[in-house]
Image (tube, rainbow, N blue to C red; front, side, top):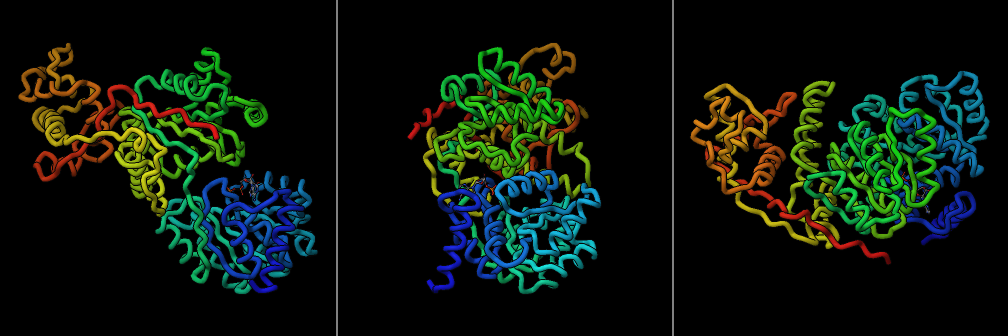
Length: 529
Ligand code: ADP
């Protein structure tokens, strides 16, 4: 190392100790900081909670001038500035929620060189007056947070982010650091291209969280299953339980309390005071359980969250990874547990069908859901699937349900054909559509009132599926839906054929299923080290 890099390292460490009060850098931080302090561009991929902020805050403090941070999360901007100010860092922000007097105060502090960090909403940089302001001050570094917004997935802010190429054009000598927690290889390439970061060095931290044990179980009686998990494996532990709806948050929290477990609800329908109070109790007290919608968690940094449980299917692997990532930040063994069933697939497909936005948007949501379903149905290592999704490789981990109790697979081609032909018969011959319940009754040859009413006992497929039980047939439906070999529509979850169904019916394609466990698989209790 040259004397130059030695000084950089000393300066960075001093700021880490004295300003932020931390003893040492986390994985990756030091290299990134030295690179940017040296004046070079960087593209940083780090999981949520990995410590991205320091990667630009420290260079801003070490280099001459003001660090300009572009962040789309206006709601978090104020908190960040407050937190920095409390540490004695001179920070300010400019966004649309501000009074003009406040804005003028920040602007003059910037011009006078009295700021270390200036946070900006991305749309500010499309305004010529903001660019003119920046041109009159001295800038040490540009940080572009949530850089994946420039790619398709973050289309909400996309136009603003695309306009950020102006930074390189007007300030070619100021180093830029783009940061993101959610980027596949394709997204990473797009970020580099769109932001003109062709020369930037890529820093890719590992997305693996080895202390988290991933488990995805079939959903039978979700609240009871959850209670068993908490009693058997996490008595007295702090954790988060995610539910899809506000109503199920309320019901689940009540259920836990009735069963002697300390739980609090959190969702956007609660008034701001209750929310703030529940959040601060969760952070302060030991062993509380937060039952919440995904409205909860952003920016929450509690090290000893021992489990994250999902009672409903997340919409994407990104979401699942981010939510489960709130477990075990202290590095101790923790559990990520998800209960998932046929109703989840039906419900999520329905949500996509009725979602706002154009077809392209719906298609994108569909792609994300399919990746999540593939993770649920895989018979391979869960961790390897997750890491593969983020463009990283891994071998079987030994700390997820599929590694601990390898699931069996079975050739479901014939079963799939039977089920799909039943749907075909009803759809083509009788112009009828039914949900999974009726189709399964037909396959099992059950003389229910509804079967008699519609004369379904005269179908040739009536009773041809008695080799499987009802739960097994539900598993077949769920996995066909997950693989896109069967579709679902309408308010009642009626089953319909997809383009790919024809390949199975025409025997051009074999189907492999994961065997439904007879009893819910139970992994050993995580050991405390
Ligand atoms: P990210 O933006 O990657 O999600 P943050 O920058 O918010 O993560 O950091 C997550 C938490 O880790 C914060 O509470 C932060 O103060 C803490 N942290 C970051 N770096 C260090 C470090 N070197 N030592 C101790 N704590 C750290």
